Image 1 (tube, one colour):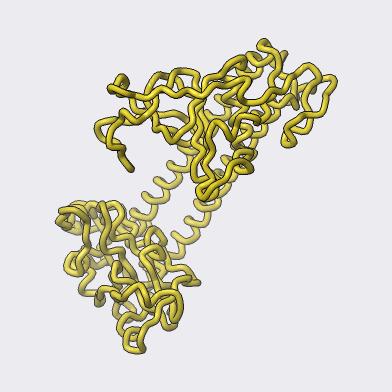
Image 2 (cartoon, rainbow, N blue to C red; image 1 turned 135 degrees about the vertical axis):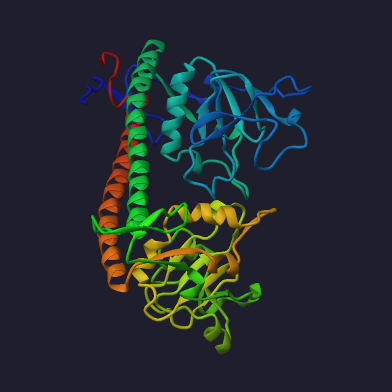
Length: 436
């Protein structure tokens, strides 16, 4: 899209804008915005709102998550077209979108700043604040330990303002163009999810049915596995090796010493990182008992939900001197029982999640025991076929990862384009008054 520029410009007061069209004005924030300070005393409102990823969203007041107030009477009432800012903890979070426009009346935490536009269209103010937000303007203001800002800190912040007619044209243009970009972002997000689903289905099929068409099949006698190649073995994991829980060690031992494989090194990593960042002071005996060798499979042992437990990670090489955390279980296959590369994919079988959900007794947390792990059904091809299947899946995974990576990059480029378009329109770098 090629858009014209304004014919003449003048220097801007705001250094981050540089220049604005000659017919635009600049005003201090206090001249175009009033802080809204209406407490929810007497629980006049129960429509609980929250600022999330640059949007104001509804939350269930009866089952809210996170830190709860003693009373929602301490919250503030906000109205449609108010612009809300979350200007707390600026030094620790430089990624969040910190402003959004309200679309409905409701209540929101008093830790946020809510303003009512006065003399500037709310929609234009919303886009202008998004441009300031993306340019990290707020981070250069304020002070204090948490670097939190209030209305007084923003009072003299420069606000650019074209005529109301041009503000309207800019808001309409940005509504249309950002909606189009958001539609593309949604489609690309769905495409990534479809790729992940297709990859998961491909892996599950390959590790339970093989990759050679037309081979004779037999009933595995396990419902969620179904038929398997006739020459494959169906067994339990416990017959293929030994399992052991990880080391329990005090917090004072961390920070130096030998490699320490943590829950985070395993969780959702299909193979252990080549470089382990964690260090722990461990004894020579510990480094024997809790060692990690090539082909070892590490499972996460406990979590809040079954969806986050039993993620396996395979050690593709021996990690010298390493010990592994007590929140993990190490399964060490007998010699030539399991190919390490095949193991990386075999435990991604989508049916295993249902198996774990049935077998675990969840009270307050999901917990994987060695007994459950050893009883887990395993479909086992001959070693040479394991390696063939693994090589095929490795090749296919690279193709999927490449597609997913390219799509993620295109998403980032679209987001950058969206931000640049908003910034250019609201600061007068482009003239959208006659944009089709």
